[in-house]
Length: 135
Image 1 (cartoon, rainbow, N blue to C red):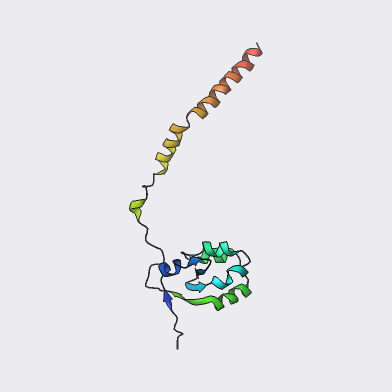
Image 2 (image 1 turned 45 degrees about the vertical axis):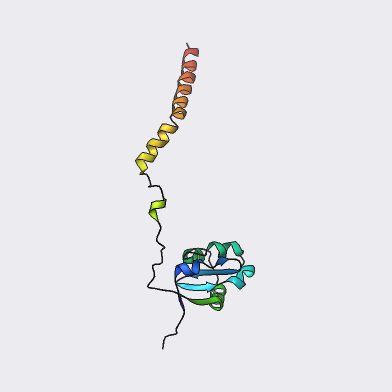
């Protein structure tokens, strides 16, 4: 018989993002690590930064030991609700539309045109000085 577990949405887990109430999500499981913050070898900031998102990649990149992985089970309070989207919906109307690479390059070229012109000018003057000096 399968074990029943409490289901949470990412939005619910994200609300627990302070040192007095800190939840993290790793590999689809929700952990209440509030009591572990002071003991975490990487410091409490690492765990506090992991709230509000799926921190599986960060957890795996840190190279946790088997002991650390076993210790996590003590803090597991449930799982992510599989019917809820993992990636939160972002309000795109609040953001400025992104520019394509060509228009960004044109913007940079129009802002910094004096630098390459100055380099070419100095190069011409220096080359002319050495060429005239040899005659």
